[in-house]
Length: 325
Image 1 (tube, rainbow, N blue to C red):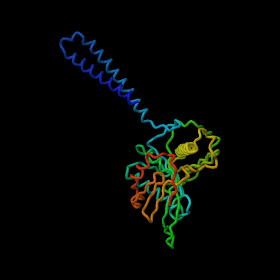
Image 2: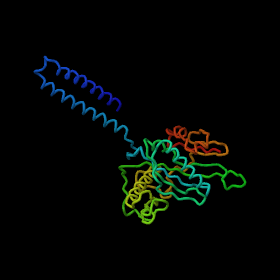
Image 3: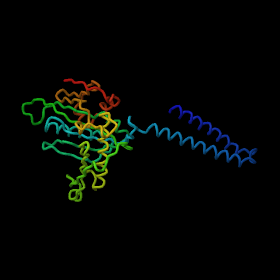
Image 4: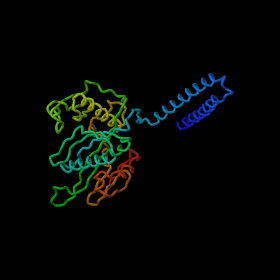
């Protein structure tokens, strides 16, 4: 592809030379009788140049168009992030909130646009059970895609009076906004439920059933959306999120057909192995896929994760997780 562009660029350069020559002839008194022919040549050359430029742009657009390994187009500038509390009760919910806050602060520092939550279930202790939100910015999906997996925390919970270190987990799933999905979702396989949105958002949002819960019967996947102020927009958002969930699940299970999904793995929109451990007492963050440690826990939890994201950006997505500690 680079070679093709190089050839086209050379052709454009040759045309520019001819255009310069012909335009010079227009100013030469000796060629006044041929002005009509010269103008015609200039018009043809300019048309040829524009055609070449259009072809070059198409090639560049094609090269920059992100396509997954199964041929499905993805939007590189949108990432759907889901953070769930894992094992560990209230401490897991608190850690899930800490991760959510970490990513949100990073996005604020980078100027990425984040949507309001699709769904945010709060835990009684102040943590969250599940939160889903969109991140929009240049190449954000590629930036965040390797954050998917189980994140483990080792620290002394605020409620632990004996000072004993607890181990809890939270899961992160990063999903792309997908287009041209080849699998078909039949309307009869969908269960739509509508209810009032919780939280702030005005009288209409809280009094009218604008929030949507969508269930895909064959897989059991459930999607909640209350981001938008109208039911129609929330229906559209929920369906798009469901498609991303199904696509991620198919990709993880390496199947090409929706009917081949294994039902017993439904809901695990992330790799089962832990990818990272946050050890608070030792001020150490370990990414098990690359076997590397990072410090500055306080800074990281406040969104200073550039170094970590860069280190794991090009890892093998199927890398084996190393059990340590």
